[in-house]
Length: 430
Ligand SMILES: CC(C)(COP(=O)(O)OP(=O)(O)OC[C@H]1O[C@@H](n2cnc3c(N)ncnc32)[C@H](O)[C@@H]1OP(=O)(O)O)[C@@H](O)C(=O)NCCC(=O)NCCS
Image 1 (spheres, rainbow, N blue to C red):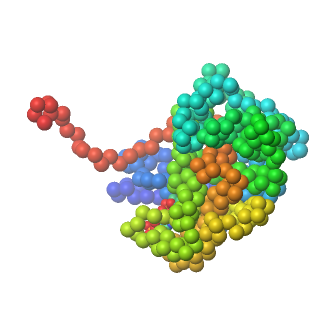
Image 2: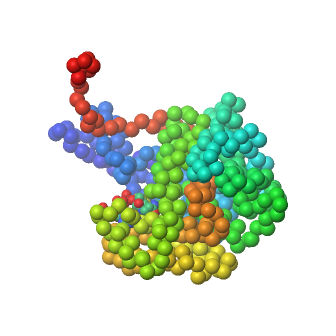
Image 3: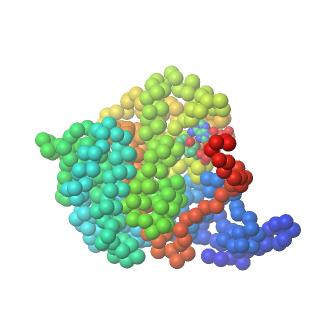
């Protein structure tokens, strides 16, 4: 929305004025789209620290307040009162479903849970010891080959089918990735189970033995999905938007998002956090590692601490900490070595001046890794679980972008600092 405010700059003595836009919540933005034309200058903002790349109605984060809203609803209320599929419906459609719409949506998702049998062959091309995220990048990207020519993504119905298809198939693809890595047969989906219980069946069941979902554990994983469903314009979501801005196939764009999510500064943090806890190994060594985290000459960082946006606390971490306690108590793991170590690390870091001054708090990944480990999910699969959940946000944001009348292909500018123009010298004279 435009406001009456303007931003006024003097560039080389010339006065230029730009409109200021205002959203529902959060910082106002200066609309600098005409800056280049008016001044011949571009802005320089590596890492997008001060740049809003789009308008969005999906998710809002207030990093100072520690607030996360999906379509206006606080994450705490959604995590406590809704299941993941309701949240998926909300994110895509803008409103929570009533009971009838919820049932219809759940039924629709169930109808799309199986993958094309030929997709199975893609798995066989991977080494068994391949990182599951490498497999995910390949297999989800491969879906674009199955669903491309028949699709017109300017058609709302086609976009809706693509959303339902991918949300339904992600649990199947993630579980197949796991089964392939451990050499067990792929499990077909069971439509008598709900979304998350079915995922656990495909992960942990075998043809030899039926998997009986434990409602406490199913609920914990469902909450993990909800907490990871969207997080506004983060690195992977921006990647999906940027890839999609060329009009590329959405399944291929989601694969690009998965690739970005894999990095340890993003979705790979919970995996990195668990690896760090294993490396620390014992409560007696926590002090040594805290010291290393504070040492500027050491590259070591406390994984699972700090966040680009949340500078007081991560609301998802608060919820996750509670889920973590529930799961460990259900499984009788309260005295688990890594959990005790994590608690000690959290306590010491929260009391340490360095972490207090820099506003470094445990983020959601700190606890979600511990919960997933307790659920029996191997560390290397953590980021795949994140990708499963975040597919809802990615698809929602992709659709918001391509239906935005102001959308343009993403094309950042640069400050060129390479060699000045020069001529090629013949090879004999070089
Ligand atoms: C998430 C993260 C990438 C945010 O980065 P950012 O907003 O760019 O913040 P910065 O990296 O500039 O950090 C600010 C300061 O805190 C320090 N810092 C940030 N996270 C730290 C950590 N986990 N351990 C130790 N020091 C940390 C930085 O070294 C920097 O110090 P300086 O001001 O003396 O240079 C960063 O905190 C991090 O790498 N955390 C660990 C990985 C993680 O858990 N990621 C999950 C995100 S959900």
